[in-house]
Amino acid sequence: MFEAAKVGRKVSKADFKARVPALRAELLEAQRQVAATGVPVVIIVSGVQAAGKGEVVDRLNHWLDPRWVQTTAFWDESDEDRDRPRYWRFWRSLPPRGEVGVLFGAWYQSPMDDHMAGDVSDSTLDAELSRIEDFERMLICDGALIVKFWFHMSERDQKRRFKALSREDRSRWTNLPTSSTFAAHYQRFERLAERVVRATDTGMAPWYLIEASNRRYRDLAVGETLLSTLRARLAQAGADEAVHAPGGPVLPNVAGARRTLLDDINMDQAMATDEYKRRLKALQAELNELAWTAYKAKRSTVLVFEGPDAGGKGGAIRRVTAAVDSRLYRTIQIAAPTDEERAHHYLWRFWRHLPRAGRMTVYDRSWYGRVLVERVEGFATPTQWSRSYFEINEFEEQLANAGVIVVKFWLNITKDEQLVRFKEREVTPHKQHKITAEDWRNREKWDEYNDAVNDMVSRTSTRHAPWVVIPANDKLFARVAVLEAVTEALRTALKDDVTS
Image (cartoon, rainbow, N blue to C red; front, side, top):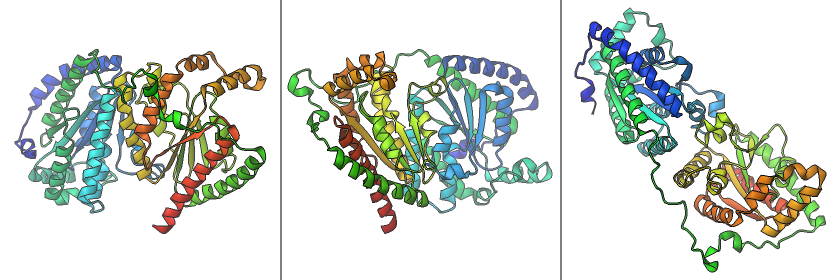
């Protein structure tokens, strides 16, 4: 497939100088318009060694407004990177809406490095390429423009480039924290590159193969291609969103058919105070030991707490965190997204808070707001929230594959119990801040939220990230049930580590 990138295309110095002024002006105008529409642009730069990828990126930073361009390379990993799931570093580098992110190698670099080194099998590589395709589709569906450049040249031209580098100032290339190993195995690397490009060359995120033997042709081809893709994206701006089926089957509007899984929970379960105190003490002691064992084993934990307003999430969380050394956990309270968070994909703000290996992050509300409040209140369109089930499952699977212990709680209360708690909050001075007009408005959509919860649990309760639905009308029972589930999850995961 790379024959078309070895035909010897050239651009003369005169032609290059004649075209560049207009191209720069057109790129700047297109960049300005894209910024105004709030489209994040991700430019991926990859290809064979010595193709001049760094020179191209320098040129783009010169041609575009550099204030809105961020460049990131992924040739090495920090301790922070290694302590988290692999895609954490990529999520942190994604540009906000309206800006441009230039990514050297991006999510393609590591799989290719590992395969060339013989560290991953063909099947593992194929699985990773499938994940990449899903990841790019997710970003594009959220409005991103992904432009992927693969720079290629013949083996003979590559050798000439290396010789030229040896006579010129080689410091820019030889000081990079990568080696010329791939260049010594050109044919094998080219076969791998063909496999990767073919597997991830999609209509939504195609690869642009750029012949790199002539620098002026290479740079001009990149500039013209980028301009074309920006203009094509602008032409789509304002187009109506495609109609998409809702995330779950629509329940017929008759009494017997409106039943959800929440209706099958025994909400009368309760616990006496004496039993609560005894079991709380024992469970918290065990959780403390398990948290330290997880730390030593470098197994991180993510706990997700969801539930209706006044469902008891805060009280349950406090009983969990009281058992864990404060140096080992963080509690993240999720509210309406900030301007910075709205400028990214909705999962971005959750990826950035993932714990390091051995630590715990507790989310008081979470990414499930996308398929709950955003769905019910109309903050997300049916197309947006319906595709989020797949995106969330993919996210949680990546956490589990990286060794993260994921436990998700839905603390369920009845509508009558919620009313009692709301009224109690109104008359209790230290609880009055917990009740707002928005809580009362949400209560009016109780049935719609129940339908959303039914879809959420049925579509996102997986083996690696199960939902634990807790009857929470009785706070004491709910808190003990949460602690039992957390300790059981850690105990099982850590036991598996020992026996594996």
